Each structure stands twice: as C-alpha cells, then as structure tokens.
Amino acid sequence: MKTGAQILLDCLRREGVDTVFGYPGARSLLVHDALMDDPDILHILVRHEQAAAHAADGYARTTGKVGVCLTTSGPGATNLVTGIATAYMDSIPMVALTCQVTTPTIGIDAFQEADMTGITRPITKHNYLVTDVKDLARIIREAFLIARTRRPGPVLVDLPSDVLGCRIKPNIPETVSRRGYREQTVVNQKQLKKAADIINRAQKPVIYAGGGIVLSEGAAELRALAEKGQIPVTHTLMAVGVMEPASPLSIGMLGMYGTWHANKAVHECDCLVAIGARFDDRVTGRVDGFARNAHIIHIDVDPASIRKVVNVELPIVGDAREAMALLVDLLEPRDRSGWLEQIREWERAFPLPRPEREHLVPHEIMEAIKSAGGPDPIVASDVGLSQMWTANYLPFSGPRRYITSGGLGTMGYALPAAMGAAIGNPGQTVFAVTGDGAFQMNIQELATCSYYDIPVKTVVMNNGKLGMVRQFQAVFMKKRYASTDLGKHVDFCTVARGFGVEAIRVTRKEELQEALNRAVAIQGPVVIDVEIDPDCYCFPMVPPGRKSVEAIFSPEEWEG
Ligand SMILES: Cc1ncc(C[n+]2csc(CCOP(=O)(O)OP(=O)(O)O)c2C)c(N)n1
Image 1 (tube, rainbow, N blue to C red):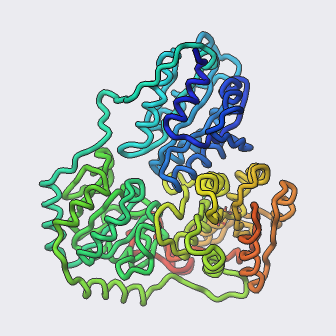
Image 2: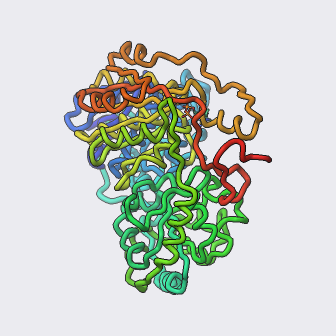
Image 3: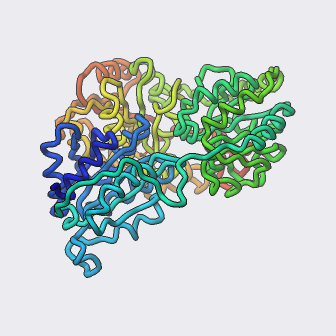
C-alpha cells in the first residue's frame, strides 16, 4: 500500500523526472516529505513560485525533456500563473503540480483555496483536478504524454491533500492514451509533393523557421533542406540557433527587431515556406503587407495555428522534422546565387548597427560574452532591449542554446530559467542576460543560486531605465519618459553579495572582457553589473502597425 504522494513520485520516476522545482506549504507537506528521502529526484527550493515555473521551463527548453514544478495550494499555486502562461505561449513541455485543499472543502472558500483548473484553463494545453487516488497514476502519465507530444505545452495537475494522503495498492498503467488525442500526425504526401513543386518553381524562396523546428529536433533537416534548394533561411526569436550563423544561407532574425535584409527578403520573396512558426504579429507587422507576392506554404503540427493569422496557400499539418525530412527528397537542387547575392546586398546597405560610443554599447558586451563563454554557452535572456541585442548580436550555432520568453514577453524570466538550464546541463557555461528592470522581478533567485551553488553568470545590462519601453517613448511619445526611469543605479553588486553571490561591477570598456573571463572562471554563481549607455536602443525597429519593410533606424526617422 502506498500514499497518493508516494504514487505521485513513482509516476515521476517512471517518466524519467530527475528534478522538481518547488516551494512547500501545508497542502504539499506529504509530497515534499516524500521527496526528502527520494534518491532519484532532486527538489530545488526556489524563493518564489514564479521562479519554479520559469526554472522548469528553462530546464525543458535546454534539455528537450518535460520540466516539472510543484507548489502548495492558493497563493503558491497562483504564483505559478505567469510562468505557466510563458510556457504555454512558447509551446514548452511542462507539468505543473499544484496541491489543493481537501476534496470535501473544495468550493467553500477554504483557507488557501484557489480554483487552479479554472484559472489556468486558457493557459494550459490541458489540466486536471484529481478527485480519486485511483485515477492519480493514469492522470500523471497522461499529463506527461500530453505535455510532450504534438504541439507541446504545460499541463497542470491539481492534487487535493486528502488524495495525496489516501493509501491504495498502486497500479501505474503501462501505456496511456486519450480518446480523441492522437500522439502523432501523419504528413500528407500529396501536399508535400505540391509544396516541393511550388518551391522547385520559385526563383526567390525564403524559409521562415520557427520554434517548432527546435521542439521537433529538426535543425539538421532544416539545414539539409536549405542547402539542397539553396534557400535562404530567416528565423524567429524562438528559433535562434537552428541555422549555423556563419552559413551563407542564414539571413538572421525577422520581425519587429529583426534584420532589415531578412524582412526585405520576406517582403520580396515569391515563395515563403513557414515551418513550425505561427505568424506572430511581432513577426508579420501589418499582415496585408507580409510576403505580399509569395506563395505561402505552412508546415505546422497544430492545425489550429494554420490560417489563424495569414491565409496561406498550402497548409501541411505534421511534425516539422518529419515533414522536412520527406520534403528534402522531393526538392530539386537549384542555383539561387543571384537571389542570395541580392539579399547580401541589402545586408551591406543596411547592416545591424554597431555604434562606437564612449560608454559600453550592446554589441561589445555580446562579443565579450561570446569570447568568455567558450564554444557553446547557454544564454537565457530576459525581456527588453537586452533580449533583442542578445538575439541579434550573439551568434548561436545550435538550437536550445538561446532561450527567452517570446510569446508572452515575461520580464523576470532570465535568472530562474538560467537556473533550470544550469541544473539540466551540468558542466555547461550558462549566462542570464538581463536588464536592470527585469532582473529586479526575480532577483530573489540569487538566494537559490547561492544555496545550491548553481553557477549562473548573470550579466545585468544596467541602463537605469526600462529601456525597451523608453525606446517607444523616444520614438512615438516625443521623448516624454513616463514611468521608465528606475532612478539612481541600483548597486547590484551589494545586493548580490547580500545573497552570498560574487559580483563584479563594470563601468569602463577596458574592464569588460577581463570581468567576464573572471566570472566564467569562478566556480559558482556570479553577477556582472555592466553600466551601459541609457540612450542606446535597438534598431532597426518596425513600428507597430507598419509593414516589415518600413523599419526605422533612429527615433528621428519617425514622423507618425
Ligand atoms: C512582467 C512584465 N511587465 C512589464 C513588461 C513590459 N516591458 C517590456 S520590456 C520592458 C522594459 C525592460 O526594462 P529592463 O529590464 O531594464 O531592460 P532594457 O529594456 O532596459 O534592456 C517592460 C517594462 C513586460 N514585458 N513584462
């Protein structure tokens, strides 16, 4: 006979879970107690439940496994909401375990009761309230199956404390399936053949590569496809690293803060092959101006994302990797050097800006991180200018190396996500790149890093401002900087040391490289607080509501 809590851990072990990011309370006592003696599952006690979700997310993004977080009921559970929504928007496999008040007291406003299945219905792929311990093992197995298959996403399981305390003879099902839920899709060969015909006929095709390629482990197939057809590839924020950045076929990121030449190529192409991407409004700009002359092919595992934003000509529902592997055989080799040269010409005309200033500027910081980080560091970036600078200026030669909150744009993501990444990838160098605003949203996690000696190197791009919002004010609000000044620079070094984390402050260019090298050489966590020019922004930028070729390169260019 075993308790529900013990059965839960048996199920987690069965799914190969080695780490749970969590925070306890009265309702989770039994699970935390069982975890204390568990030889296989490490429980990381975060300092705020939001960080548990982001850490599970960072673990999942960098390992490809399902991330797991665990909280008590009520406020512990509701604190997960932003982290779950972050994972949902970016299709990240996660199982969120929230403990609940006892089944007889559900619905009477019991102490620390919150209706978690109700609250998270719109931000989970699926969710469950377990009302009978006999269902527990099956539900946990289903939760993992649903989280990691098809279009992945977070699944929440709400666990009343009496269910966790109930004793039964455990019976973990060998296999699980859900009626109406097919784990796999079968790619339609006829549609693929049509796609190949369109691509083979195209003079100026472009591949628009999205996060689905990362999730399906399809980077090699993408590279083969691009190579065979000599097709340039632009990627989304979610797909950083899917192409080798030095490849002549890689044309950088598209969208609001993408490269001018990638946006221009999409604007001028005669065939756009969207793979594992969802035509996010930050990518398309004004939809009626997006790829206006192109035959659009859309390959995606989720039929609901097809024709949601853009009326594509040829939809193909299926796993991105599988579809690309089949498509590559149908493509005819082509010489498209004229088209590729045209895109390079656009790049030479409007390269990513690399300004020279007295103060430290972003691309210099990215170059220094690259030089200190070795061949393949993992970088979790926050949300703000630091995010776009990292995506544009730091080269990543593989997927699952650059992680960020793309769809929801959650400030405070970087440090906890980097923690999860570091735990999932022992021995790897892991950076969190953050702004001074976003850092303060989960800064308490320095305590977690210090306690467990998680060696995250946090680079704070400290401009004393909420830079990305300030950029909007500089461009669109006539430089009225409402509520974006964070005041006198916070001394993050003192704060970090208070948490028991080593810290280095950088104010001058000459100090930067040496500081980063030293941070990487230190065994444990380090904060590198880098003072940067507050008037440094991220350009080119496509103004909201404009076509993606209407990017501006400075605030002065805007006359709207
Ligand atoms: C939780 C949350 N609140 C508000 C925002 C809106 N927002 C987007 S970027 C940004 C500024 C970020 O400032 P900072 O972290 O200092 O980075 P910087 O842009 O200066 O690099 C804000 C407030 C958000 N994305 N997330």
